[in-house]
Amino acid sequence: MTAARRRELEEIFGADRVEDTPITRRLYSQDLTALSLVDRRHSADEALPDAVVWPETVHEVSRLLRWASEGKVPVVTYGGGTSLRAATMPSTGAIVCDMKRMKRVTRMDENSMIVTAEAGILGEALQHELRLVGLTLGHFPPAFYGSTLGGFLATRSAGSLSTRYGPIEDMVISLQAVLPDGSIVKTRTAPRSATGPDFNHVFLGSQGTLGIITRASLRCRMAPATRTFAAYKFADWNDGVTAMRLMMRKGLLPAAVRYSDPPETARTFARMEDEPDGNVLVLVFEGHDRRALLEASIAAEIALSCHCTQLGEEAARHWFDHRFAEAYRRSPVLAEDGAYMEVIDTAATWSRLPTLIASLRDALAGEGRQVSLYVANASSVGASVCLTVQGHTPAGEEGKTLQAIWTAALSTIRQGGGTVSYRQGIGPWQIDALKEELGVGYDLLRDMKRQIDPNGIMNPGAFGFDRTS
Ligand SMILES: Cc1cc2nc3c(=O)[nH]c(=O)nc-3n(C[C@H](O)[C@H](O)[C@H](O)COP(=O)(O)OP(=O)(O)OC[C@H]3O[C@@H](n4cnc5c(N)ncnc54)[C@H](O)[C@@H]3O)c2cc1C
Image (cartoon, rainbow, N blue to C red):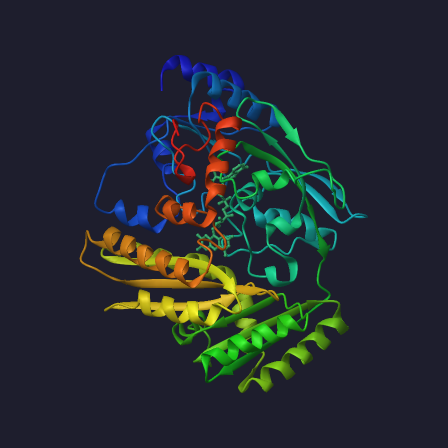
């Protein structure tokens, strides 16, 4: 970065909140995307940002974006950097805007059960503040300890208890964001509104391409008074899927409903003393004590009518207590040369789900490779499927292998009527599939991007929009 540019950034942030040391630039050139992590084992090529800045106020964000638009400098917004879809990977010369110093809870409206917080707050910190007043957001994705509110919103995140509490878009009431020209937009905090389209949704899932979300107000729930656990084992995989569907159809609202196949069960419960095996359905009900117990007993009747064995509470408790460990189980695998591991997610309606799952298993099977999966985030309409593909390949071939896995997965998802991404957003290798899924909507999205960000400064490359498209 030129000395003049650095001085201009220091005028906005002060010298201590602008960093351009090689180590900082390198640290911020990487997120948790498997494809880029394995590529880096064998290649020193990397796009480094010019500098990292840490805003503390919305006005600093506004000044940054006005400055960047005038100089046509790319800006990549950075929350916790836990994206698995290369969503924070900077282009050379970019400024990374790390939001984690904007982390205050600015309002706690306990009467209306609404919390307002700055976008850089970590999921755990926000939950801690809510816990102190007997509330919860109910948003618990596996990387909860390291990811931010802004990241949740910008990727349309869904947590492991979303069956009861909903994905992030169900929680947002209003937000504040800074557009690339520096203007600040705010939506109104009201229980609901029919004042035309919902502008919150312009920013939800936008992956930092349209501006920077600086604050959001979210609906909360009462912290649960009780929690009940149950687990069931199904000899036939499809019986368990049917049980989930029937529970949703009856209007039950388990906090968690997670159904794993034998390899996923082995992985999930590996550290349990008496670990279950086979196809295992875990259920967690929480909330008002009598209602949770009643719902759990109705769920048990449904499960048992679908030919299963009752496993007791322990397996479900174990999953609940260790659910954040899921975020760390890739690390030892990805540290080993030749090893790869990728997480692929989709969602489909109940009518399509069993066939889609069978096709994905066939399409992803390979020698020396393990494919495991679980079904979760259920509703009366359908559910998500999360697959983990893990194996070994000759060193240097990992990237090619992962690309081939993605190609097979995306084509199977398309043919099976699933969505390209249930959560986590869209990586560069998913763009063709995104175009196909959105159809004319993709052109509209590009037009909107041009209109809002004519200089193409915000997260260039994301969604396949380069700076000239
Ligand atoms: C092992 C593992 C498991 C995961 N499982 C899940 C899961 O179950 N469900 C799920 O939803 N996610 C999951 N994720 C993915 C990730 O945690 C989510 O996408 C999370 O929402 C990203 O938040 P972050 O703060 O880390 O965002 P980042 O990774 O820093 O950024 C993600 C995107 O959001 C943009 N962004 C960030 N903050 C802002 C802002 N303030 N304004 C505008 N744009 C912004 C960035 O530019 C980028 O495009 C998982 C990740 C890991 C490592």
